[in-house]
Image (cartoon, rainbow, N blue to C red; front, side):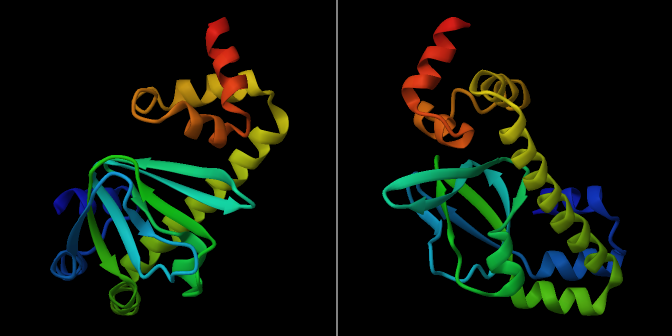
Length: 187
C-alpha cells in the first residue's frame, strides 16, 4: 500500500500525519480479467491505484466502443467526472487482466481534504493532470493521421503493446482494426 502513497508524494508531499491517516483508510480489491470495475450509470465512489494489472476506460455508444484510456501498474485513476461530481458515469472501466487495486472511498478523500491541505493539493494536481492529458490527446487526434497516432502510442506505451488487443488499440486511436493491421504491416 505504500506504493500508492509514493505515487501521491510524487504530486505533492503529504505531511506525516496525512500519510498515516491516508494509509489507515485504504482498502484492496481484486478483479478478474473481463470484470467491470465501474459500469455506465454507476457513481464512481473510489480513487484507485493499480498494484498489478491493466484496465481500460471506455465509452459505449450505438454498439461502438471508444477507448478513452488504459491504466497499468503504479497508476492512480478514477472515472473523473463521476468521482468529482458524484453523478452516474458515462464511462465504463474493465479489467483487461487479473488486476489488484488499492483504493480509497470518496467520503474518505473528502474528509482527508478538509483535514490536511497537502492532500487537497495532491487532488488538485492529479485532477488537473488528467484534464491536461485529455486535452493533449484530443489535440493529437486532430493533428495526426492514423499512422502517426499508432507510432505515438507504441513509442509512449511499449510496455502495453503485447498486453492490449489490436481491437482496443485501434479503438483508442480511432481507426478500424483492419486499418491498424495495415499500418503494422508497413512497419
